[in-house]
Image (cartoon, rainbow, N blue to C red):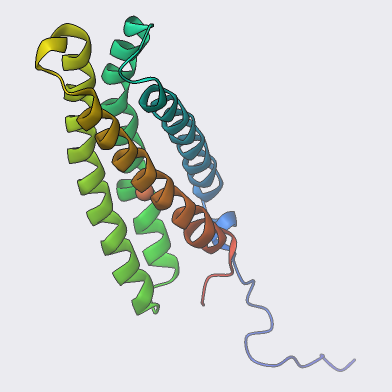
Length: 168
Ligand SMILES: [Fe+2]
């Protein structure tokens, strides 16, 4: 019986990055972090709309305390797990390298901004005389608008790469 011949590479099972070890969980975690940050943006927008007449100052303080941890946890996951995974799977894509550098820079900017927003919210509650609500509202809008743009880009560009076929 004649052994069937196949073109070179026929028996190579092409892997999707989504099938790689840990990739599914990494992807799931990215989406969860995005959802948490989108909810945070909504709360910050509500707050900016209320200023200077914020009634629930305790919730304002809680928000101030949550921002940094939430942002840094999300960034840590992307930078330590997700980006290296993507770069390894798409190592011939020079544009991806440049894009990830830009995303890392935006993370750094957002973390600095998160510190300022957090301080601003805390000052508004604990030392209102020294707080300028207009400046705070402007700061909040700058922060959540930038964060929303960053998340929208990652959802549009990074998430599809996690489910695309990796080059062999
Ligand atoms: Fe990010």
